[in-house]
Length: 311
Ligand code: HMG
Ligand code: MG
Image (cartoon, rainbow, N blue to C red; front, side):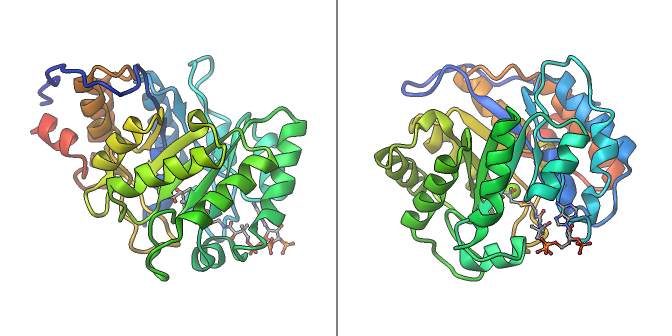
């Protein structure tokens, strides 16, 4: 039995009126499941997330299926996306082969995913930090010719499991390369969830100084060390208005073993509802969706709000 609750509303100054939640559970969450989830479950998840009012639901990835077998059914999933829901359904694409497959499957929005470190570029992309743009540049250019907006993820912005700390200037350089190549927006990934709020404020400030429009910056926090919500508040105070999260806190990265789930969408919506920041998301519908998925996955959701509301 789900007990429906809402936080007491008490706004704070210096925050945006509205935040766009970029839901990544169906992609970042399910790419990390050891069991292969049937396409029918993925499709129902995406439908439920769209019905809960999420404006952006990252649907799947067109990567090499040998690298991420969990999402090898990308074309099948794309064929059954909800129609006329008003929700956007971007997909991850690493290269021209991926773009071709994504377009054939009907994708109208994509994301490339760069690394801020050498180790992760090699492990996740089989490329070097220096030559990763040789793969992404042509994708971004071809997408632009087709009128397809491209988001540029940057992973390991705040710490790397092999290299330790990451030079913020390298993060800024990769962000600038993506924007100059034609990305419409960015997402700063704390892939292993080690960042703390001062790092977030620092990187946003450095990006502003480097002439990156803060409106183009999204944040993507994994919650490994329990810092994701604090980092989100720091990002909002810095002017960021797009926040990535995953329903029920699903997630991880198959090529970064220490990564756990993303910031849970329910925990984010609880905070934003309390702050009076509009998201358009129906918290109860979202909690019910995560409860349904947790039952299918056979384990409880790591989201604190889901646990509190389900009892
Ligand atoms: P590669 O092995 O270097 O590929 O992989 P290649 O370019 O040498 O091509 C080899 C063969 O693969 C060719 O076939 C290609 O056609 C085929 P052959 O000629 O030998 O028959 N191929 C493909 N087939 C289908 N779809 C494709 C594709 N590309 C090549 N797209 C590659 C390079 C980048 C493709 C590989 O490393 C890869 O797929 N990596 C993806 C890893 C991944 O998905 N990681 C998780 C997502 S990133 C993430 O989670 C972080 C994020 O959440 C943010 C954060 O938290 O920080 C976004
Ligand atoms: Mg991620």
